[in-house]
Length: 357
Image (cartoon, rainbow, N blue to C red; front, side, top):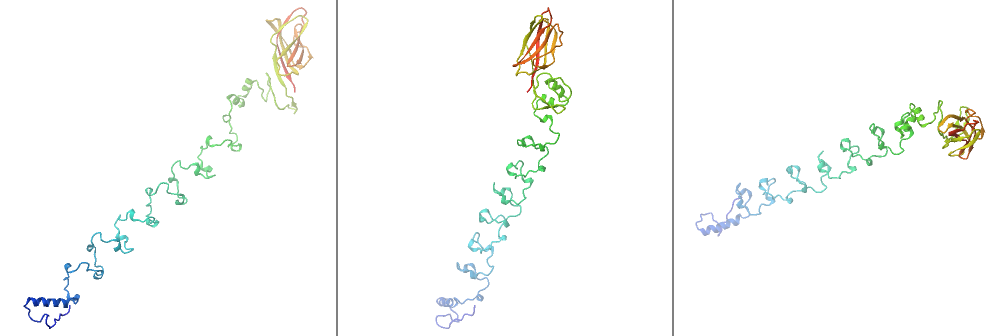
């Protein structure tokens, strides 16, 4: 503050000693009027302006020097949003764990804000990850749970031979009619693979075939064998000269009971029951004797055409077969007792006849 010059006129403070109180007050008022608005910073003693000397709301922004307001000068909870300039809350201003979920605006946690390996299982909701979120070729074996590769997950033609474990294509994996001839290794269809009865397996086995044919009364394809019983053939049978062997039917029948035959007499005996009309005789045989209970001889015809006459092997003085004639589902056998005085008995007339085509 500069020098105060007191006016030298009535009513002002004189450069003299003032002893009258009224005069003092009068002079003080004049001083205040003179000083008011004229005190400059240099006139104020350092640190002389105390808090009580400052009027309320008198410290404006212009009164504050740069960097004058320190932390301890700010009352707690009084730095409001409006006091903070845009983009001035930097990382250094945030305390650890200060930014809670409600402080983050939706859709503002971008990829760059997420630390590597920070998204663990607890951060991913159920059924959230779609195909587009997987990097191609990133799902390796350890990330696939057991028994999770179902049929629907396999592309057509995806399972190659090397992917199938040995001995794991079981019967249940094969479709009906899936195994074709080309898939079967030569010489690997064994008897055990064929749905055959035990006896049919025996027929096909070289070691047991002869025994089985004997049981069946069947004829082998090689060697010499005696044919017994009725045999039925289909198709052509060719002999060693290349000629067709004509197929035929054959049956053997016998009479139910015998009878007696007087000396020097003949009788026709019908052997019936054939399934068809015979055309030729393979063999005809009878038993004969002096009584119905004492049959001791055999008369046999070795075969011939129907209606032919012939001499049998029997002695001429006993019963002989002299004629065999084919009929409707029967064969008629003519017998003769050649003995001049003895009556003979016959029984068990057995005829094997054939029918040619």
